[in-house]
Image 1 (cartoon, rainbow, N blue to C red):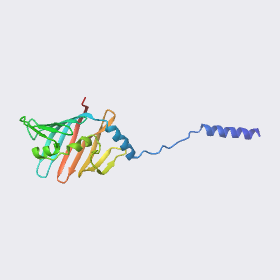
Image 2: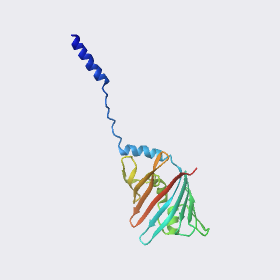
Image 3: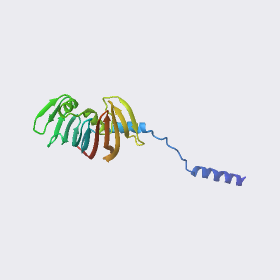
Image 4: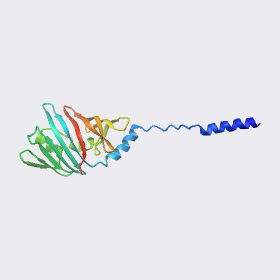
Amino acid sequence: MCRKLFLLWVMLTLTACSPIWQTRPAVSPEALAQARQIELLQLNNWKIQGRTVIRNKQEAWNVGLRWQQNNDEFQIQLLGPFAQGGVSIEGNDKSVIMTMDDGQKLQSTNPEALIAKTLGVQLPIDALRFWIRGLPYQQSKVELVEYDEKGRITHLIQQGWNVDFKRYVPFKQYSLPSKIFITRADRSLRLVITSWKDSL
C-alpha cells in the first residue's frame, strides 16, 4: 500500500514539475498591418532626402528630392533637371505655391495640377505623403494591398497607381520605406530615400 502511495506521489510530482507548452496563436499580417497603420498615422512631422527618377512616354528626369512635412504643411524641393537651382513647392491641404529657379511664384489650390501644367509631369503628391510612410492613401479606396510577414505593405494599387515597396529601413521605432517604385500606364516614379529625420 505504501509503495503504491509512493509511486502515485512521484507521478503527481513529475506531472506538476513538467513544463506546460502553450502555443500562442499566430498573428496574421493583416492584424500586424492594422496595428502598424495606427502607429504610422501618428508620424506627422518628418523630412526625407533622396533621389527620384520620373518617366513618361517621351522623357525621363533624374531629380534630387527633399521633402519636409509638419502635419498638413509641406515643403518639397525638386533639385534639377527642371531648372539649375531646382523647384520649391510649399503649401497645405488648401493652397500651394511653386517657386521656380528664377524666383517666379505660381499659386494653386491643386498641387498635382500645378506640377503637371508647369513641369509637364504627373506626381500624385497627396497620395505620396502617405505612401512615403508605407501607408495607403487615406482619402482613396484601396484596390489591392499585399503585406509581408511583419505587416508592411509590399504592393498597393490606388487611384490606378501600382506602388511597390522594395525596401524598408529602421527609423526610431518605425520601419519606413527607403525604395518605392510607382507606375501607372506609361508613367513611373522611382523613389530612393537616403535619409529619414524628424522635422521638429
